[in-house]
Image 1: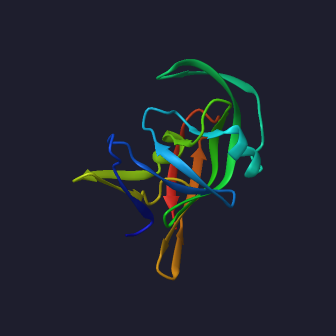
Image 2: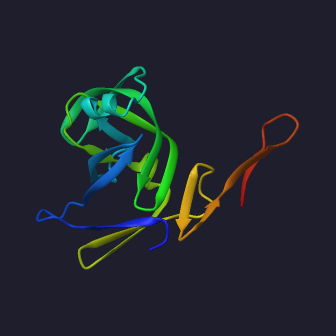
Image 3: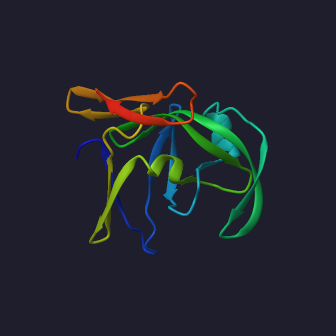
Length: 156
């Protein structure tokens, strides 16, 4: 599979796996309802993630608080993502793989298996490994003179 990962549903229909965040392997629960990747405080410390400002978060379990952060490098299968917006939580025991990472993948579910494949050209910080070759995509933003009209293009 090119630049992605396969996940099998558990007994409750949840998709779980392992990600490598800043060199530290961590369990995750895939959560399309989570705005950002959310990392438990103990794992965030182990991965040397920066701790930012406190944020109010609305979750399926109600209101809670966390702090803003950034994941310098995260590996999901063969995909390498860099500089991902994240949240650090004081109440979780596993990573919630939210949309700040998932938006970079195409998702296909079939017979209890979820296939995540990296979207080509989505983000300058997404590297897709294909055998021995690596494809890097550059994000270019061009604006008019007054900066009011901008467009984004992608190239290898």
